[in-house]
Length: 181
Image (cartoon, rainbow, N blue to C red):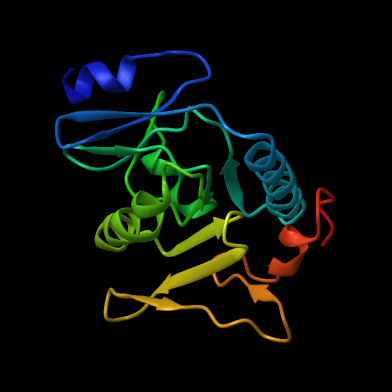
């Protein structure tokens, strides 16, 4: 399948990515993954909407073309108003301002290592990795040197640089099945 064919390929409910000629199809989400996805995307969406900051999308079918030959499907993406020119009918033509990946058993290496490199190289300003299996959250922000630097927690809270004023407590993800912030 070519990249152009991949971009118009529409298999409802399927999460897939195109990496240098290879199509990677991801298995269905677990209940915990879906619950995290739903809760976090709702929080970010409400914040973005309330402050009229831009566009936040969260779905299995988001296509983000970071470069020729690389189309990823982050769990959550945010794009500030001033950059809406990269939105195409069926994909983003460039790096979003924020990409969030929720790690599943089959995506550990991909989310922690490969996508870290790919998002950094493409210029994604902020990248969050939420790993319910290891009860770990890491967030990175692109520095002036075009390299990712870890965002340190302040008083147990992650403060987004891309979404000014937005913060969350990573511990809320590991407090059982309730999504409390």
